[in-house]
Image (cartoon, rainbow, N blue to C red; front, side, top):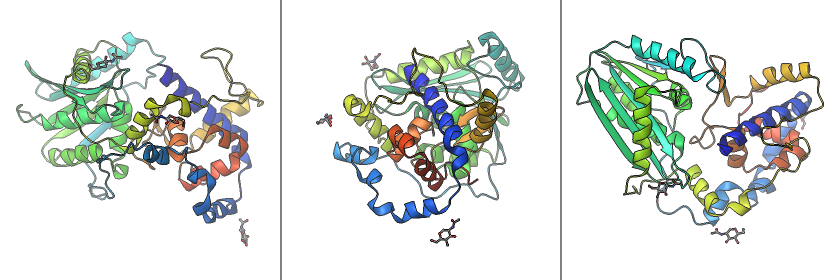
Amino acid sequence: MEGKFNAVLEFVLMELIFIKFGSSIGSRNRTSAYLKDWCNNQRLERNNNPFSQVISCNQITNTVEQRHLTQSIDPPVGLPGVFYHTNLPVPVNEQKDHPTYLRQLALEIINDIPVDALKVYTDGSRNDSDCTGSGIYITKHNQELKIQRRNPDFCSVFRSELIAVNEGLDSLSSFSCSNEIWMLTDSRSSIQHLANWHRVRDNTGMNILNKLKSLSVSYRIHLQWIASHVDIQGNEIADELAKAGADDASVPSAPLTYLELFSRAKSGNKTIWLIPPEHHWYHCSRPGGCLSIDCSRCDQTTLTRFLSGHIRSLIFSDNSKCFEIFPKCASEQATPDHILACLGISKQDLVSNPLLTLDFFRVHRLVDPT
Ligand SMILES: *[C@@H]1O[C@H](CO)[C@@H](O)[C@H](O)[C@H]1NC(C)=O
Ligand SMILES: *[C@@H]1O[C@H](CO)[C@@H](O)[C@H](O)[C@H]1NC(C)=O
Ligand SMILES: *[C@@H]1O[C@H](CO)[C@@H](O)[C@H](O)[C@H]1NC(C)=O
């Protein structure tokens, strides 16, 4: 929960930084100068950058989850038989809308699924000791299949969600199926990730895409988001299976991604990573308190809308913001927190040198060129 709050806070923080400094960037030369200086750049060399930390803590043992350099889907062909639904028939806000309403809308979709279609509910789980699992519940008429599996410790929830989708697609063979498959997940970001198939390079994502490619020759496949914890039976079952999976006795020794290795290193040594924020405008007097900034409310709103629409890592999907997978590491969602961690930039850098940081983001193509 706290993590979620922090992510939101970071996001707000990021928007404020863009509001504060966004309008004053202009010079392209700053970026090229920065690039020229790249090889002796202190910021990247100093050893609290996550990647050098992971290496210096000896976290990279023998295996790291494979990444691909090229996409497996032919862009002109695409995946014409696959449909991505990151919202319900009426756009909803999972945080604000009433659970009964979310449930009702989800049930409208589920009830419209043809009776002879396969319904595959998937979920991922991670407990407070970083044990992770995936759950899959496949159902058609009165036939059903439940699968739980444990994932390697420190596997991200996002990847556990994708593993569940992958495993679900693998397990359809015992069902006869007419021509529709519905994958139902409460992970919007997984659907968003797969919808951006041309940018997928992570191993799990690639495996899913390859399966979608061959299945979509014979089936229409729908990837549908549904709200979590609103008492949708299939989703509750998948959730329980994922939790049970995380509790399974034997831990697989599957490889982790760099970011997961980083997360493992971080959890082993919390002190060096938790740098408290120092800036007055960052401070909240109480949890959930507001940030304030010297800027009229109207300007704030205009700029927030304008600027956030130009942050590449944010995708607008039916009026809700989703974070895309961060292209630099391609294994985690590009939350502002994650972007900073992944680039080895601290909040101090953002404040002491916002223009350079913004250029840095541009170099990494995290914001569109203005
Ligand atoms: C960038 O710098 C070059 C010389 O290094 C100069 O000729 C050019 O006008 C500059 N461009 C901008 C946009 O300032
Ligand atoms: C997480 O799951 C593992 C495996 O079952 C268990 O040993 C551990 O106590 C759990 N941690 C928490 C905080 O529930
Ligand atoms: C934790 O960080 C401290 C300070 O950087 C370091 O001395 C120590 O070796 C680290 N411990 C582990 C387990 O990495």
